[in-house]
Image (tube, helix red, strand yellow):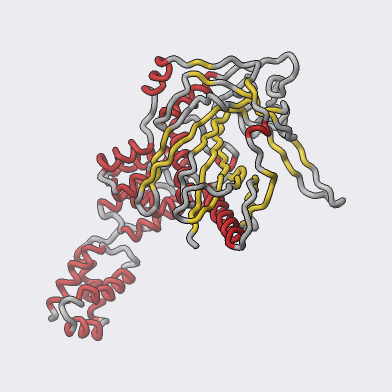
Length: 487
């Protein structure tokens, strides 16, 4: 049997407002527990919520970036459920009339293909608090605490249609959402701090069927890698059950990254379980056409538009342009390097090669790079003017990453300047040829088509003799002339 995975994502994006959705309490990350929850966040008697205008602005900007319908009239409801980190006993959210309606987003996959994923809607809501589970004591008992600092922080929940058919597509969609919200500046998108979280709705069906299978919801996944792994392992679990003659139970499940498995959390609630009703303390919010158009005019250059410009302006491949525009900070870094060194392709190669490897290895963001854009541009200029070879440049880059200074400082300090003196290189070529009689005979007797490949031995010996500092182009030119003269 051939199975098809069907995936829809619910992405929770914490908005970068200074205060909460309905109160003036601070949203600053990292404060001591329970120091940033005020009486309004706790719904104490006698308090009334006041909507945060900046949160609406952020939500509308997101909707415009997604080519979505904007809810000119949006309404808040109360979603009732009981959980220790929900101090009100309900969550103020939007259901029937959300701030953002249907839209769409184009995702790009590693094989070069593209796909459009439909957006069902995006709505504003307040975040809950956070449960903290401490270590187990000697008695065998642990302790849980509640931090309400996050309670009331504004979120947009972005709900897709079930249009994705693989874990790779889901990750591409999630990365595109991350890219858009960070380009807009409405969220830092830091998944490690909970600024962006994902619930994945996963089901399977036989290839060719139109009816959707029973779905499970994977709750609060906080990294791109875990989203991919969780979807794959959950789909495999469901397929195994169905092929054994069982049935899938609609439920909420958690992904255990250590064991790479999902486990049941609770039966899946439906809307009736939450007893939604309009919030009696909040009037409908009505947006004017002028307000929406003003925000449309304030939209920054978004990832797809930036990628198209980089292709046109810097003659980059579609792959490089897409890779370099996934994050606004990366795109800005690239443009700084490219403008400073005048070598856009080399800048792209170094960023997607050596720099990306360094950042991945050290688990750093582009903003934390130990090699600045100006330093990388300086290194590329030294390759461009033949001060150093590409091979030596990698040594210089490593030294720069270790804090030894810019390219010129490292080259001077370590004596890495490329040897481009014709006389010195000729002498090295003569010495290697004289010491390689057998290889010279092989070269003489070889077919002309094979000789270029056989030169590799001589080039390697010369580079070894020069400690990698001889100019490779000059070596190849002088070496070929001298070898051909022996034919």
